[in-house]
Image (cartoon, rainbow, N blue to C red; front, side, top):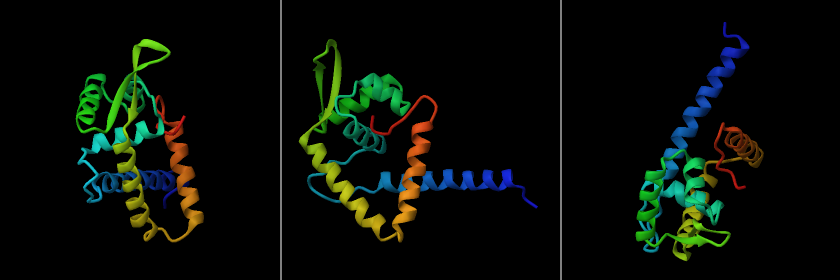
Length: 152
């Protein structure tokens, strides 16, 4: 017989596995469109995060996503080369840099989101479950030690 804590642990493990699988599927699915530049999975995560946090500093981006600063610099440089982000001097601190999406990136995100809605809407049958799942995932993200990717 499984006691309550074992059953809860099994559900939490299953949730983590499913989050991983679904996240991977979403990160791999890029709609075919001439305006969408091919991006790596990490570039896609950066794109979404910068979209939610316009003007973010590279150091904040590194901390929020748990990526080494040298890797953040490499990814941002690649995204700049693709015309997806622009770095500007921080108006409040001339030593700092802020990162913003370009119009091209914003259009790409809109197309990607439209595609995700089209795919997921056919798989999600009830809005109550959708709301509950969204609240649960936001609570997990917000409560993650040292990192939160939710909008500030």
